Amino acid sequence: MDQIQTDILNLLRKADHPLIVPDVRVDGDSIGSAAAIIDYLALVGKSAKAYISGPLPERYQFIPHADKMTTDPGVLVDPTIDLLIFVDCSDGPYVAEILGKMKASPSIINIDHHATNPRYGTVNLVDTGAPATAELVYQLLVAANYSFTREAVTALLTGITFDTTALGNGGTNARALNAVADLTMMGGKPEAVANKLLRNRRVQALRVWGTALGRLRKYPEHNLVVTHLTRADLTENGVTDDEMYELKNYLGIVSETDTVCVLKEQEGSNGSKAAEGAKGSVGASFRSVKRDVAALAKQFGGGGHKQAAGCEIPGTLQEAEATLLAALQKPMP
Ligand SMILES: [Mn+2]
Image 1 (tube, rainbow, N blue to C red):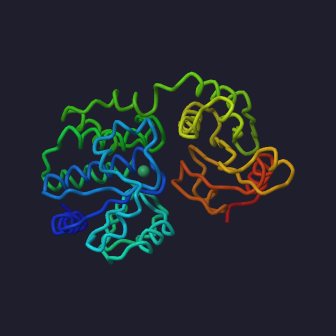
Image 2 (image 1 turned 90 degrees about the vertical axis):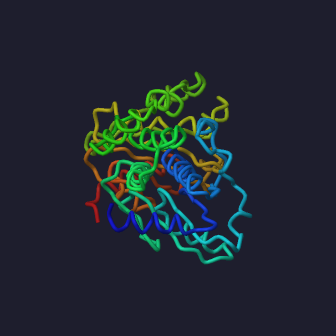
């Protein structure tokens, strides 16, 4: 066990009122990592909750300990909180926002695998070689000699499966395969997790995927393909943003170009008004093989991983695409 793991386990064991805070983006890795830590804390006699920024989307309802994840900001003002555990969170302003709402001044554990993590913790377990934060939590629990429950196994498989798109994307490495093999030996069901998390899409949602696929535009000079989704695509078909989430990941896996970009009108942007020049913004998600899309996203105030990143670009869909193409003309800063 290394020193950082020892320090984290000591803080977890010492804490009377720990609170877990997954990243502001509720996703399989942030939620799976949180669930595994809740599970471990229960074993050492602590009933911990996780504070999440928004309700759990339907497809995450199967996550163990979902009942201990709350959107109630009231949990943050509890003056007895003595430990915060951030997982998968490289978002400094979000950490500051959470701390700003608190009455207590707890110790902070920071477990993450993003290169852009600002290391805001009392203890920072930040490892960009990890395929998922859940893999770091897995290593931590191995170091703790934890006898993994079925719940912890499912939670950790969820994190790794999500971030590696079922061991299919560029983030998949030996550590991912090792952890998944080990968790499978413990009785985990990676196929079942992948089905719940990444497959089983509703036909309505797949039709909208089809619309987006039909709009693919290739920019060979940038080794890039771009597509877009309007708010109307979603509302007229009765599908949610969450149901579109995997589109960029599958495009990233199956496209011949280096980089894929999915542009999506943000909620609150009105397509027709935006077209008339009113304010609006576009979410841009990137997946790549070689290009550093984290650096690209950072130019627009976003971030992420080298091969998977995102940002928000002001303007209409057309304007956002033009802005993006202009940024690619220039050499990277
Ligand atoms: Mn992650």
